[in-house]
Length: 224
Ligand code: CA
Image 1 (cartoon, rainbow, N blue to C red):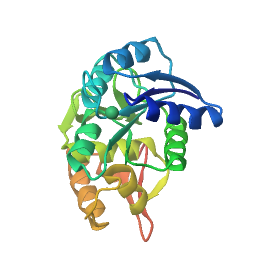
Image 2: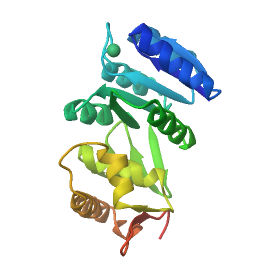
Image 3: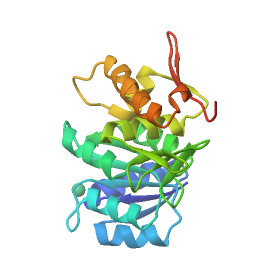
Image 4: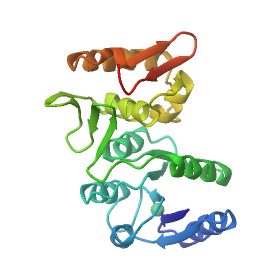
């Protein structure tokens, strides 16, 4: 895969590059946000690894700029350990996944592989499962002309489910994908947010799309 690594610490950047090249990825390095945006625009990259703390414009701003330009490349955000606010801000800004520093390189590689397998968000910022469309720019779910506002977490949850449409996903997979490594999160938070999301989908008359698979987890269907 073609990976863009945005990291201002030269040693860290070189280390990440070496590990990725050893796995036969092709790596571009940007050491600041402005360069990152320019390189991403010149793309195409399969995955962008983006450090949250950069010397010029911070990673979250870089991410917003990329998404505003219609660059839908999956982004793995590198955040400070334990910084829940960073991760929430990152997911809200359109990050697809995050990894807290310090991380194991094996985990970095696994997450990059997983992101590379995901279909990228279409360039217009819309993810869809059948006629149910998630509009990343307006932060709404819509069916035809009808739309409903989503909270940040409902939005992340629906995005995760749409990326796994037709599959059964377990509570743990949802926790990992939407809540990540946040401490003090219990698995019943998944059920709670599924109920919120179902209520919102009900406003679009699509609550039936989100099935409970008893004893396993949940599944979003593309059609009724
Ligand atoms: Ca940094």
